[in-house]
Length: 238
Image 1 (cartoon, rainbow, N blue to C red):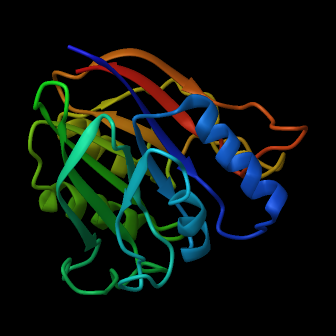
Image 2 (cartoon, rainbow, N blue to C red):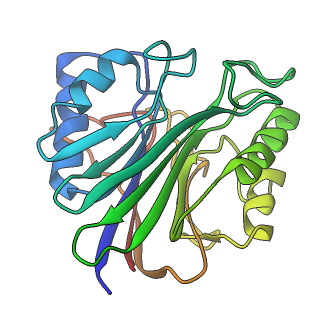
Protein backbone atom coordinates (compact mmCIF):
# COMPACT_ATOMS: atom_id res chain seq x y z
CA UNK A 1 0.00 0.00 0.00
CA UNK A 2 1.23 3.46 -0.91
CA UNK A 3 0.25 6.99 0.00
CA UNK A 4 -1.17 9.28 -2.68
CA UNK A 5 -2.09 12.96 -2.69
CA UNK A 6 -5.31 13.92 -4.47
CA UNK A 7 -6.41 17.51 -5.11
CA UNK A 8 -9.49 19.21 -6.52
CA UNK A 9 -9.14 22.84 -7.59
CA UNK A 10 -11.56 25.24 -9.28
CA UNK A 11 -9.22 27.66 -11.05
CA UNK A 12 -11.77 30.42 -11.89
CA UNK A 13 -12.07 30.85 -15.63
CA UNK A 14 -12.22 34.67 -15.48
CA UNK A 15 -9.87 37.32 -14.05
CA UNK A 16 -6.80 35.59 -15.44
CA UNK A 17 -3.55 37.48 -15.16
CA UNK A 18 0.12 36.46 -15.22
CA UNK A 19 0.25 37.07 -11.47
CA UNK A 20 -2.79 34.93 -10.64
CA UNK A 21 -1.70 32.20 -13.03
CA UNK A 22 1.65 32.14 -11.29
CA UNK A 23 -0.04 31.76 -7.90
CA UNK A 24 -2.17 28.83 -9.11
CA UNK A 25 0.82 27.00 -10.56
CA UNK A 26 2.94 27.73 -7.50
CA UNK A 27 0.31 26.27 -5.19
CA UNK A 28 -0.01 23.12 -7.30
CA UNK A 29 3.76 22.68 -7.41
CA UNK A 30 4.09 23.24 -3.68
CA UNK A 31 1.76 20.34 -2.84
CA UNK A 32 2.69 18.15 -5.85
CA UNK A 33 -0.52 16.10 -5.94
CA UNK A 34 -0.28 12.72 -7.61
CA UNK A 35 -3.80 13.24 -8.97
CA UNK A 36 -5.48 16.56 -9.68
CA UNK A 37 -8.98 17.41 -10.87
CA UNK A 38 -9.44 20.98 -12.11
CA UNK A 39 -12.60 22.87 -12.93
CA UNK A 40 -13.18 26.03 -15.02
CA UNK A 41 -10.00 25.30 -16.95
CA UNK A 42 -10.25 27.27 -20.19
CA UNK A 43 -8.03 26.33 -23.15
CA UNK A 44 -5.59 29.00 -21.95
CA UNK A 45 -5.55 27.48 -18.49
CA UNK A 46 -4.93 24.08 -20.03
CA UNK A 47 -1.86 25.40 -21.86
CA UNK A 48 -0.45 26.56 -18.52
CA UNK A 49 -1.30 23.30 -16.77
CA UNK A 50 0.27 21.25 -19.53
CA UNK A 51 3.49 23.13 -18.80
CA UNK A 52 3.69 21.61 -15.31
CA UNK A 53 6.70 19.30 -15.27
CA UNK A 54 5.90 15.65 -14.71
CA UNK A 55 2.15 15.82 -15.36
CA UNK A 56 -0.14 14.59 -18.11
CA UNK A 57 -3.59 16.16 -18.56
CA UNK A 58 -6.62 14.40 -20.07
CA UNK A 59 -10.09 15.59 -21.03
CA UNK A 60 -12.02 17.73 -23.50
CA UNK A 61 -13.66 21.12 -23.30
CA UNK A 62 -17.34 21.07 -22.43
CA UNK A 63 -18.29 22.43 -25.85
CA UNK A 64 -16.41 19.58 -27.54
CA UNK A 65 -12.76 18.91 -28.38
CA UNK A 66 -10.71 21.91 -27.22
CA UNK A 67 -13.64 24.31 -26.89
CA UNK A 68 -14.97 25.63 -23.61
CA UNK A 69 -14.08 24.87 -20.02
CA UNK A 70 -12.37 21.60 -19.13
CA UNK A 71 -12.95 19.45 -16.09
CA UNK A 72 -9.58 17.86 -16.67
CA UNK A 73 -7.73 15.15 -14.79
CA UNK A 74 -3.99 15.53 -14.34
CA UNK A 75 -1.72 12.77 -13.07
CA UNK A 76 1.96 12.39 -12.33
CA UNK A 77 3.61 10.41 -15.10
CA UNK A 78 6.20 8.95 -12.75
CA UNK A 79 3.37 7.40 -10.71
CA UNK A 80 0.79 6.35 -13.31
CA UNK A 81 0.32 5.24 -16.88
CA UNK A 82 -2.93 6.04 -18.70
CA UNK A 83 -5.08 3.08 -19.71
CA UNK A 84 -8.12 4.95 -21.01
CA UNK A 85 -9.89 8.29 -20.84
CA UNK A 86 -13.36 9.60 -21.65
CA UNK A 87 -15.24 12.88 -21.55
CA UNK A 88 -18.99 12.51 -21.21
CA UNK A 89 -21.77 15.10 -21.06
CA UNK A 90 -24.06 15.14 -18.02
CA UNK A 91 -27.23 14.94 -20.06
CA UNK A 92 -29.65 12.42 -21.53
CA UNK A 93 -27.13 11.87 -24.37
CA UNK A 94 -23.78 11.58 -22.57
CA UNK A 95 -21.71 10.79 -25.66
CA UNK A 96 -22.90 13.90 -27.50
CA UNK A 97 -22.11 17.54 -26.82
CA UNK A 98 -25.34 18.34 -24.99
CA UNK A 99 -26.87 19.53 -21.75
CA UNK A 100 -29.72 18.76 -19.41
CA UNK A 101 -32.78 20.91 -20.26
CA UNK A 102 -32.64 22.75 -16.94
CA UNK A 103 -28.87 23.23 -16.93
CA UNK A 104 -27.53 26.71 -17.61
CA UNK A 105 -24.37 25.32 -19.22
CA UNK A 106 -22.95 22.23 -20.82
CA UNK A 107 -21.56 20.10 -18.01
CA UNK A 108 -19.14 17.22 -18.30
CA UNK A 109 -17.32 14.46 -16.46
CA UNK A 110 -13.79 13.37 -17.27
CA UNK A 111 -12.84 9.79 -16.47
CA UNK A 112 -9.23 8.58 -16.45
CA UNK A 113 -8.41 4.92 -15.84
CA UNK A 114 -4.85 4.68 -14.58
CA UNK A 115 -2.36 1.95 -13.70
CA UNK A 116 0.07 2.61 -10.88
CA UNK A 117 3.58 1.94 -12.11
CA UNK A 118 4.95 0.67 -8.82
CA UNK A 119 2.60 -2.29 -8.43
CA UNK A 120 0.18 -2.38 -11.38
CA UNK A 121 -2.82 -1.43 -9.26
CA UNK A 122 -5.71 0.13 -11.18
CA UNK A 123 -7.36 3.40 -10.19
CA UNK A 124 -10.11 5.48 -11.75
CA UNK A 125 -10.27 9.25 -11.31
CA UNK A 126 -13.51 11.03 -12.26
CA UNK A 127 -13.65 14.82 -12.22
CA UNK A 128 -16.68 17.04 -12.76
CA UNK A 129 -18.32 20.44 -12.32
CA UNK A 130 -22.08 20.43 -11.79
CA UNK A 131 -24.38 23.25 -12.88
CA UNK A 132 -24.28 26.45 -10.88
CA UNK A 133 -27.97 27.42 -11.33
CA UNK A 134 -30.44 24.55 -11.30
CA UNK A 135 -30.92 22.15 -8.36
CA UNK A 136 -32.88 19.81 -10.64
CA UNK A 137 -30.06 19.90 -13.16
CA UNK A 138 -27.47 19.05 -10.51
CA UNK A 139 -29.56 16.14 -9.27
CA UNK A 140 -29.90 14.77 -12.79
CA UNK A 141 -26.23 15.38 -13.56
CA UNK A 142 -24.92 13.46 -10.57
CA UNK A 143 -27.16 10.53 -11.51
CA UNK A 144 -25.72 10.54 -15.02
CA UNK A 145 -22.21 10.63 -13.56
CA UNK A 146 -22.89 7.64 -11.32
CA UNK A 147 -24.57 5.64 -14.08
CA UNK A 148 -21.92 6.36 -16.71
CA UNK A 149 -18.77 5.60 -14.74
CA UNK A 150 -16.90 2.50 -15.94
CA UNK A 151 -14.34 2.24 -13.18
CA UNK A 152 -11.47 -0.16 -12.79
CA UNK A 153 -9.93 -0.55 -9.37
CA UNK A 154 -10.37 2.08 -6.71
CA UNK A 155 -12.45 5.14 -7.59
CA UNK A 156 -11.99 8.80 -6.66
CA UNK A 157 -14.50 11.46 -7.70
CA UNK A 158 -13.39 15.09 -7.50
CA UNK A 159 -15.23 18.23 -8.36
CA UNK A 160 -17.11 21.43 -7.78
CA UNK A 161 -20.62 20.12 -7.11
CA UNK A 162 -22.10 23.61 -6.57
CA UNK A 163 -24.08 22.29 -3.61
CA UNK A 164 -23.66 21.80 0.10
CA UNK A 165 -23.57 18.58 2.15
CA UNK A 166 -27.31 18.82 2.90
CA UNK A 167 -28.18 18.64 -0.81
CA UNK A 168 -29.58 15.89 -3.00
CA UNK A 169 -26.47 15.38 -5.17
CA UNK A 170 -24.30 14.99 -2.07
CA UNK A 171 -26.70 12.39 -0.67
CA UNK A 172 -26.67 10.57 -4.02
CA UNK A 173 -22.89 10.20 -3.77
CA UNK A 174 -23.06 8.91 -0.20
CA UNK A 175 -25.91 6.52 -1.00
CA UNK A 176 -23.85 5.19 -3.93
CA UNK A 177 -21.23 4.10 -1.41
CA UNK A 178 -18.77 6.96 -1.62
CA UNK A 179 -17.19 8.62 1.38
CA UNK A 180 -16.71 12.37 1.53
CA UNK A 181 -13.03 12.82 2.41
CA UNK A 182 -14.12 15.65 4.70
CA UNK A 183 -16.88 13.52 6.26
CA UNK A 184 -19.29 16.43 5.83
CA UNK A 185 -17.24 18.64 8.16
CA UNK A 186 -15.20 20.67 5.71
CA UNK A 187 -14.51 24.36 6.24
CA UNK A 188 -15.77 26.55 3.42
CA UNK A 189 -14.23 25.86 0.03
CA UNK A 190 -15.74 28.72 -2.01
CA UNK A 191 -14.79 32.13 -0.67
CA UNK A 192 -15.41 34.43 -3.63
CA UNK A 193 -12.41 36.56 -2.69
CA UNK A 194 -14.00 37.39 0.65
CA UNK A 195 -17.66 37.51 -0.41
CA UNK A 196 -18.77 33.97 0.53
CA UNK A 197 -18.04 30.92 2.65
CA UNK A 198 -19.66 27.70 1.48
CA UNK A 199 -18.73 24.05 1.02
CA UNK A 200 -19.21 23.02 -2.60
CA UNK A 201 -15.91 21.31 -3.56
CA UNK A 202 -15.39 17.64 -2.77
CA UNK A 203 -13.24 14.56 -2.95
CA UNK A 204 -15.31 11.38 -2.78
CA UNK A 205 -13.61 8.05 -2.12
CA UNK A 206 -14.86 4.54 -2.81
CA UNK A 207 -14.79 1.84 -0.11
CA UNK A 208 -11.33 0.41 0.42
CA UNK A 209 -9.52 3.72 0.00
CA UNK A 210 -7.96 4.59 3.35
CA UNK A 211 -7.95 8.28 4.25
CA UNK A 212 -4.93 9.69 6.06
CA UNK A 213 -5.78 13.40 6.04
CA UNK A 214 -7.95 16.07 4.45
CA UNK A 215 -7.19 19.78 4.10
CA UNK A 216 -8.77 22.89 2.67
CA UNK A 217 -5.78 24.86 1.37
CA UNK A 218 -6.86 28.33 2.39
CA UNK A 219 -3.49 30.06 2.22
CA UNK A 220 -2.57 33.10 0.20
CA UNK A 221 0.32 33.13 -2.26
CA UNK A 222 2.34 36.34 -2.18
CA UNK A 223 -0.48 38.11 -0.37
CA UNK A 224 -3.37 37.06 -2.63
CA UNK A 225 -5.63 34.06 -3.09
CA UNK A 226 -4.93 32.09 -6.28
CA UNK A 227 -8.64 31.57 -7.04
CA UNK A 228 -12.12 32.23 -5.68
CA UNK A 229 -12.16 28.60 -4.49
CA UNK A 230 -9.75 26.98 -2.08
CA UNK A 231 -8.26 23.74 -3.37
CA UNK A 232 -9.00 20.64 -1.31
CA UNK A 233 -6.39 17.96 -0.72
CA UNK A 234 -6.64 14.41 0.62
CA UNK A 235 -3.83 12.05 1.49
CA UNK A 236 -4.97 8.49 0.93
CA UNK A 237 -3.47 5.03 1.12
CA UNK A 238 -4.16 2.61 -1.68
